[in-house]
Image 1 (cartoon, helix red, strand yellow):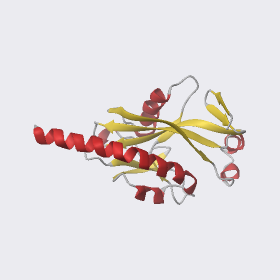
Image 2 (cartoon, helix red, strand yellow):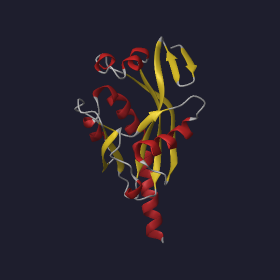
Image 3 (cartoon, one colour):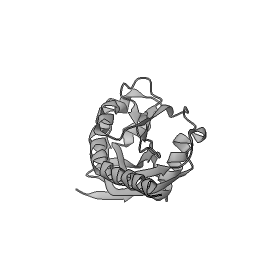
Image 4 (tube, one colour):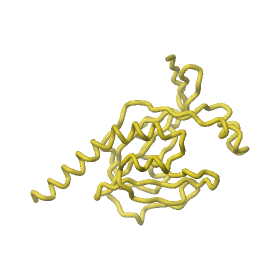
Length: 183
């Protein structure tokens, strides 16, 4: 595999991927934030918040910026960062489905993501959902069952991320529960 890093994009084996951060937000009950994209034509429009990494920006900075831009969330902190870049390709039909994004999809083959686990301390009054990108949200149990609601071309990445991060979230929730019991 040959790789060339070019700011907002990474080229791997002749394919161009946009750098992106995936965001798994959990609340005090251990539920995760699952959001629905504002795309009427997509049957499986649910996903974790995500967004691009701007030129010169670190993934740590991008994750907090994107979290705020997509959801309005400020009261949160990074508790885990997966340092593996995970890529998915856009399906061919996406390259021709939208005149608005045609040039983007013509030049980019997919996205490559680093995933973060974010602890949320606020209340939902700070949420800005619905908005231009997201129309709905739910707090869900963090399990592989979520994958059924995700667009098919992202499912392998979601499966790998959930398998990697679920034990970490479970440990965090268990530790917090034990701390409450000892107080």
